[in-house]
Length: 264
Image (cartoon, rainbow, N blue to C red; front, side):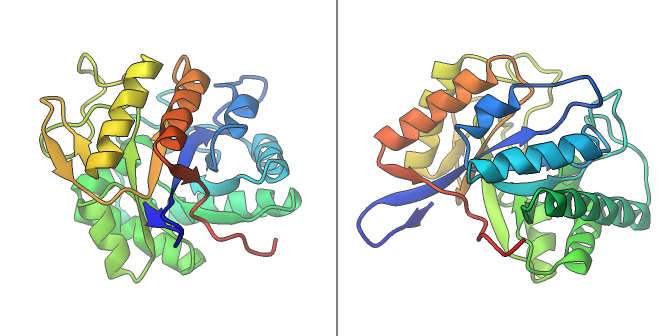
């Protein structure tokens, strides 16, 4: 959260988009782009393809929405949510490849990639494993050292990005439960994904006012919050994003992308 000098506060709202493939679509990207301020665009590994990347970038540009690269494991069947055993050099190359792919597709759409946020199992591993986190940070720095990295606060991914000299943007999840260690609860656990849009909105309001993540037990862990994620593939994602935006605006927040627009 940042102040604007006039007593107001600003915050970013992001969602994962462009995760279909060929004729198959996932989520209502058009509706979500009318709500969020930043879009994490799949880069062809867990979802997405060149045509979808170009179309998503173009639609985001038309609505004034920032876009970021959302690299993950090459695992369409598992939607990038299954960990794959890989060496650090392989992870580094795969992440660089995916960022580059979206940069090229965004250029075709007249837009520009403004940040990087790891997806699914790759992101979860980067929060726990210093080597994975460092590989992602090296890839981002090699492609464009000015690209911010969206991370969960207080974990290995944040430390690696900072060590690489990258700007970090700290994120909380609106529709995902947290364990007592500040990590996301495993999706196999009951209640790990929260589907009630009004419950999600109330939870977000509590977290941003407390400047903390709320664990499954109700404990609050203090964190910095600069952006809030709503998963675009969840049923009811649009209603959830709208409810979150409304509760933030009622709380005096101005919704604005953290990524600084740059010339395409």
